[in-house]
Length: 298
Length: 223
Image (tube, rainbow over all chains, first blue to last red; front, side, top):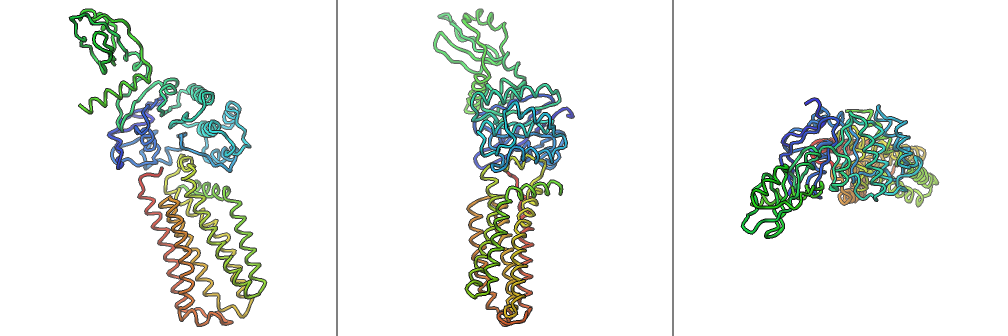
């Protein structure tokens, strides 16, 4: 358990209109995990519990070996946190914020902060209220990164950014990966962003973790099969089929356990495989969510 | 309790509110100047202005450093720092009280000095002490409500209640026999009634701040 940066064990939080239900999650050190979910799925609640800002009703949370929320002050000394709803003080300059954060974090890296200033094209003497949304996100990211945290927690940081600012932010995050000891938890409803930087993916929907695995495993195992059935054939029974679409003799199957042997299995069953399409993370996420919701209804 | 962190957060609020603090000090000194001119109208006008300035600065600080912090979403930034909510609460109480004490003490020392300097007004000193403490109590009420509710609506309600309490208590205390008797005389007559009211005020301040810490410690959601 020592090499786990984040460990959630049966964590629940009950609100009048939303429940985070029995969440168990492990984030090994050095991993970049993308937490993907629709709006209101429970991403922010999970992250707030991780940060000790919301207390779980049940379950255990360990962050960097610290029990949360009890040891949140000690844990947060090694965490950099940026969230979409986080703002800096408008009347103060970025330089003031940098000095303030530097006075708190002994590991503050001033040369790195200056490098980030140049890379993000930020002016330290500029007041925060004069910055654009993109610049404010970059400023918050700078303050989080230059403290050299062991764990970086980013809650929808790219929301509302223009494409250029988004790519700059993502680019900097990818540069941070050079540090093997750094662990990142990145939440977003934008699967493209998550796909770019994460090596571990967790899907969350309606307060429950519905899937969590290595990104490559997701991308390798999920496939869309376009079939043509012979007149007397039925849709073949294949492993891991989560969705059957298409119509009549042209069914489209989505499987989460694709194996090349499936193609010959289909041929044997009287179905010709017209195409085996790889799926994007967004398509995998949507198929995953639909499949789980349908199971819940049944 | 990480006192070094509490101190940093207090200094942060002082820095961000530095112009309001300076403005309040100028306001207090200006109203004391009006009172010092000696006329009866100037005395009453100055007194009303002084109370207004002091109450306003207490309310303004609570709104600016607590309610606005949540409203303008700077609270997530503060809470991302290595602090617990206990330290956050301590920093807000100390930060606000210390800021408030600057103009409040200026008011207390200034008004006491003026009363002692003018021999015919010395009898007002116990009443002035009670009313100054009532203003401090009113500020603590606003601070407690702002911290516990983090709501603009409830804080505004507390400001109104605090204002009414200052006026109401001012009237009631002025009619307590033990206090009213020597109020307009040339000598200070410190009665048991005056001591009891002052003790009740300080006890209430202690209770308010204690309850604030207890309620904050039991909170489960900070964002």
